[in-house]
Amino acid sequence: MSDKRKYPRVEAFLDARWQGTMANCNVRIADLSEGGCYIDTIGEVIVGEPLLLKILMPNGQTLDLEGIVVHHSPRLGFGVRFVNLSEKQRSQVRSLIESKNE
Image (cartoon, rainbow, N blue to C red; front, top):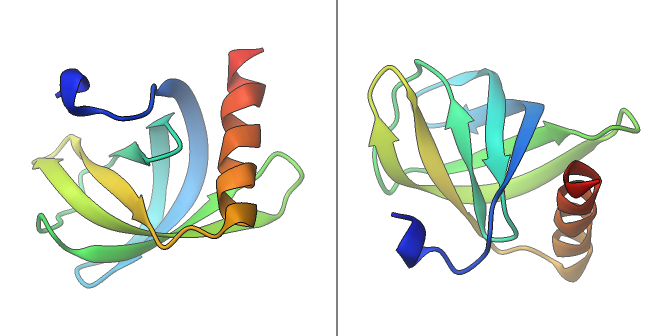
């Protein structure tokens, strides 16, 4: 999997809210890159499912990102590829990544 990634990932441990067709629940983002993230959850998804992630930022605001489920490990979690990111959203993701690299 890692050799297919376009962007390097960092451990993140961020709280988020996942809103998809199958569920709407609080989750934990385990790692993050400019292109996507991995979500730790026992929740069920379907590969290809679109979803909305509301990531809790360190300043208390939320960062809303659209994504597509790209892989799923039942009862462990799933990978998301971000889609339709604005330059502002991309910049906010980069800031999150930089804060985790410090």
